[in-house]
Amino acid sequence: MKICIIEGCEKPSITRNWCGMHYRRYQRCGDPMKKSDRLHGMTGSAIYDCWQNIKRNHDIFFEWHSFANFYNDVGDKPTWGHFLQKLDKDKPYGPDNFYWHITEKNRKWNESKQMS
Ligand SMILES: [Zn+2]
Image (cartoon, rainbow, N blue to C red; front, side, top):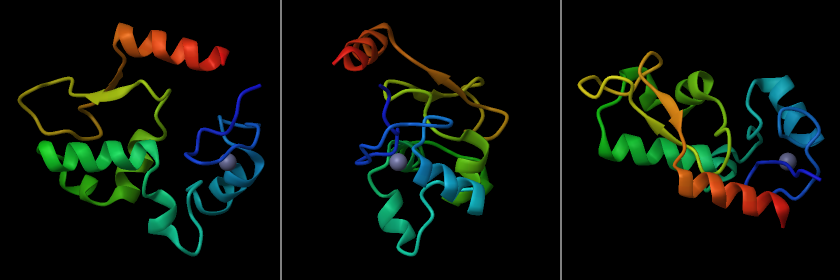
């Protein structure tokens, strides 16, 4: 059985890799992490870490300095092992300049994780 991809959430995933609660949040406000204590909810999520990492280490499209905009364009990580790469190394990360990459090692790790 697959579980919700939100970090720390152990509920079974129902739709788009989210559990019912997170999916309802998405339907309601376009953001599965949205709740009263929003920043706390995002901190530690895989995609939030990903955003912080590229923000710290790379030039990014100005609208992506807002996590909400970034998340709107990129969405959730396809799997835990994926990470963002640039299509064009000479340009900043942005809506037209990213793709999800996964290494062979991470792919194997994903597979072993799914079996456990
Ligand atoms: Zn959940």
